[in-house]
Length: 125
Image (cartoon, rainbow, N blue to C red):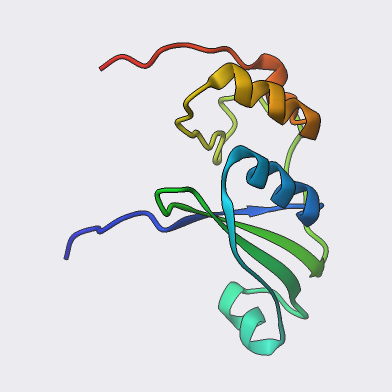
């Protein structure tokens, strides 16, 4: 058996509407949104009394980012908000874009702090 593709990445968010607006502005499309809850969901993900709203966003080439807002139980923040790059866990999601300067200008309206440190460059190879 061989790996076919990566289908999606899950990001748990506090503000689902703001996260959806951010990724929509970036160029992703909303594939669907739903609320899930109940014992079967809880047993699937290992939590009790789960109620969450999920939004699946897709890039133009079909890659997915699933945004989840947990209503119950409350989401848990693990570690500092401004953790250094060598902190364990997912540290980056990267996209290829046509005009980096234009994207950065548009995205700053959504307030992502990482854009403050954004620099442009040309990929080689």
